[in-house]
Length: 163
Image (tube, rainbow, N blue to C red):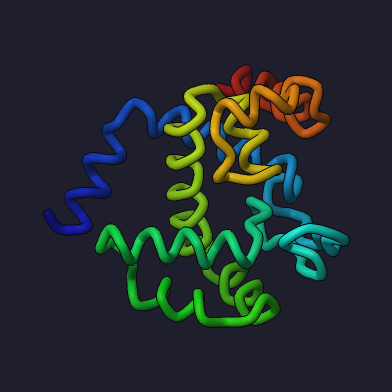
């Protein structure tokens, strides 16, 4: 099946609507809807010393992982492959200058966390705290008390009312 047909089928998928709302909400939290790309430097953990990128707050390691998954699925583009080999600063410049590429990567990650978590709140927590967390791990962490999840719920309700 060619990429255009896959994209058209995905656009007709009812899950796509939920994914759009999910990503719109994430974008509001991470970058004020794409207006503030000045993400703070991470001070500890696997992303220590790095900054999130763009509208959706994608981390460089996460971008590389999303591209690796796309390669395994046979859906990675040459541009995706190229960005995965770049350092964090260059990766940020490329993604922020190519909103379609950034959106593609964000959609792939959103599809993964929404399918895995089966709940928008859990998926938002997973987006922020680690997209490879299992639903059981998210449950054990009292995700509903997370400031990120609270912001997510408040903003998602506002965005729902706009529709």
